[in-house]
Length: 258
Image: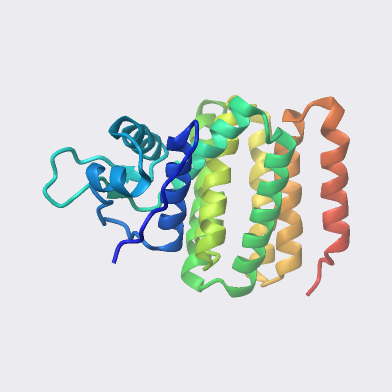
């Protein structure tokens, strides 16, 4: 049974409508693929005009919550499945347009998320998962050449993504996927210098060795150091010490032997 929405009385009534519909979707009152009430039903429940309802539906559709189906005999717009693309777009917009999240905050978030997923992989990986990581790492070695920089970067991204995929925790995987893509989009990273590829490959080799030993803390620390080595140069001088202090504190507080 569909929930009954409450009438709204506001100068910007469509915003209150958006909030109520979002909350209904979050609560599970509307499942993916289910139709919202028709525009006429929404007008009756909210006590607003058709134009207000349509503005609210437009906002909800732009945010990815619904998909309009004009003229559908089954009712109104259709609730959409959750997508990490939507969360990614929202984060990029929040960072690039509102400046409410700084680059250092974003990198701190990635550091914490990926160090934790790496710990889980080290402790609980399957042999098949480890073999996939080793295969990608071996591929990276063959790409250590000035003309292969772009391919090396792609393999590096796959390596980090596979760590998240192998953590056997869907929430961490989703968060890692989003933050990995957001960092890439926000930084618009330039191609790596060819002379840095071998150092990156060696850092990954140490990460793999710690995973093979099922040493969670060592793996976590090595991932933190790997990310710091790569991203510190992107952080403004005024905030760089804040990031490096976090890296040093994090690794010092986590012993390297289980």
